[in-house]
Image (cartoon, rainbow over all chains, first blue to last red; front, side, top):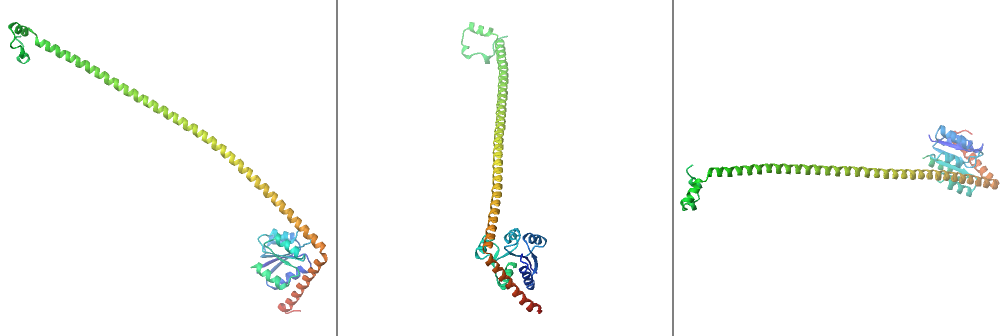
Length: 115
Length: 172
């Protein structure tokens, strides 16, 4: 079973994402900050990291992805097209999604990233 | 003695006169021949001595020449060895100098690469920090739209999760 590390500081979206992914057959670990995500990844290496870009701590989702260079990454943001473009430029190997994303589309991207 | 033997008597004297015959008869041929033989032996002995001397001389000359040749060869060998040693020393000195130069250059290169790498990493971190700051500013400037997108995502996830619960779990 593929392991997904979800990094989301929203107290509503994080659990919803985790629930949806679990219902689709993934093992999910949920972190609410960048440092917590890095610690979880060190304990149990994930197959995919799915992270929000804006997190409440000083580390962004980009920082999380850069700490896990060998893990396929998906970054979501509500920042609009300019932010999506900036993230894609900074993280050329990551898949960048602009919120709101249709859940079926998100699951398709997760499947592709998990391999 | 009655006269010289016929074999040693000159034939052209056969017809000489009595006085001559008497004279020839009186000559002590044996003594003369003996003296001649002795002289020849003496000359031969002298020649032998001279030959021995010459032989010895030549042998000594040959030995001296050989010794001289050996000496020259030894000196040439010694010169060659000294030259080889000197050349090796000079060559070794040049090699050491070249090696030190290469080591110095490699050290400088390594330090330069390290410094450039460190500076590059610092610049990269600064660029990332600026990116984060710029995006954070963008979020605050675009606060209303940002919140709307987050809310739309929440609704989408909630909708899907609710549908999945009903479909997969069979529970409301």
